[in-house]
Amino acid sequence: MTAEALYDAFKVSLAGGLLSLDRTAALQTMVSRPIVAAPVIGYILGNPSAGLIVGAMLELIFIGDAPVGRYIPVHETDLSVMVAAMTITIIDAMGLNSGVESGRRLIAAGVVAALPLSLVAMLPLSRVFHLADTFTRRANLRFFNSAQGAVENGVRISLTMENLKGLALFFTTNALALFLVSAPALFLSRLIFSRTGLHWRLLPAFAWCAVLGMAVALNAVYTDKRGALVFAASGIAAAIAFAFL
Amino acid sequence: MVSKYTMLRVFLGSFFIQSAWSFEKMQGLGFAAAISPALREIYGDDEKAGNDAVKRHLVYYNAHPYMASPVIGAVMRLEEKARDGERTPPAPAEFKNKVMGPYGAIGDSFFWSGLRPLASCAGAAAAIFWGIWGPVIFLAVYNTFHLWMRWNGLKKGYTLGEGVVGYIKGLDLPAWSIRARYAASAMLGLLAASAAARIPVSAGRVHAAGWAVATVIVVSGAAFLLGIFFKKGVSIPAIIYAAAIPLIVYGAVSGF
Image (cartoon, rainbow over all chains, first blue to last red; front, side, top):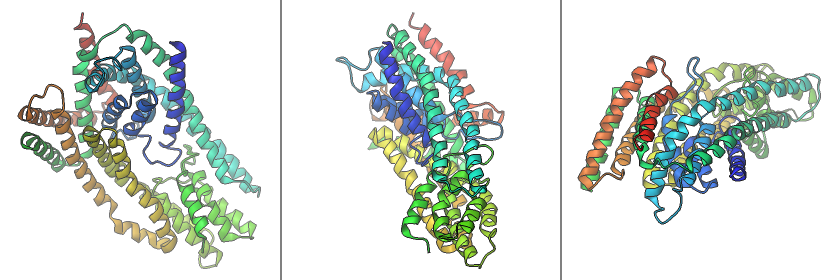
């Protein structure tokens, strides 16, 4: 069990570290957003469908979580990587990923049981990811100073290489933080949930997370009453279409 | 004129403008690293002038990462003019400092507050209908505009020089941000109705439609309440804990 948890933690940390680069250090193509990062982790751990449900829900919950005033936003990439990994580990531990009943309904039962638990467990630990990020952003000044010193003294250096040292540091600190959190989290998830069968009893908690996700997203996107009206009109039009088409 | 190969190197470098992001200098090193291939070509054998140009750009810089592309392009053009004596040597850096603030605000408003929520809602809605294609649609919607701004912005900046300011103004991105948010609201309505209509308890079309309408009403009410909480400084994690923990405890205890 320990070796399996450590191997999963290693894969999750490596993939999560690479995905996190897109958040600040490179590209910004949004592969670091939960809706992409969580299914990737799901694929790596053998359950992309569960990863997709986790990703879609976290995408909505953190759609508008921006650094406003003194508020520091949650590290949504590392959090979604960890929530997806823990959700899938719990599903496996509960035995909800295989057997004669396996299929859509069983995956749904697994996600309903595991997602709220994983989210509540991982949110406080996301502070670790924030600390790693802050450390990197402080340490990066060293690369700037070293480049500036060389240029001031007329020494010909590759600015690209100096710049990419920051990228390497972002990867290292993120991957390390993910490993520090994921190794014990995945081990304990296997240990605790192999004897538990919560399944559909957590449906109210799951439904709350889903409604919260949509409500947070709506709150983040509408600028005035017209936005809320557009939401309601579109939803009711869709409902009418479901009834008659 | 800067060669196509150098243009491509600068374009690729623009994707790494935040690689060495620091609290004090922000994108300063990334900007200098991205533009350095062009500076080397512009100043050629004149090593001193080239080194002075690098020095001018190895300073604090902060803007939206995609909106750096039109600035880099314009600065390349201005550096050419400075080399030819049509502008003073400090002119390119002065231009850069003048536009980084407004471009940062425009980029934040359009890309972070408009386009990304729209792409997120489209991706999440698509995930309900087409599963794993949801993330692909999210990336396609977002990156069509993102990559267009990176490449077209760089090219327009280089072609127009300081005139790129008028070009960016003409795009009217703040107005498009508001339109994108309305589109995101509509997409979210579709998402809420679709998610509700697909839950396992729905039996028959009319029943599913009823669930869809109920969900739209519940989400609207919850969004209104959240607005009040957010204004009072309550964070998203606090709201998650407040309701999810009691529900998890209820779920765990109810089985015994």
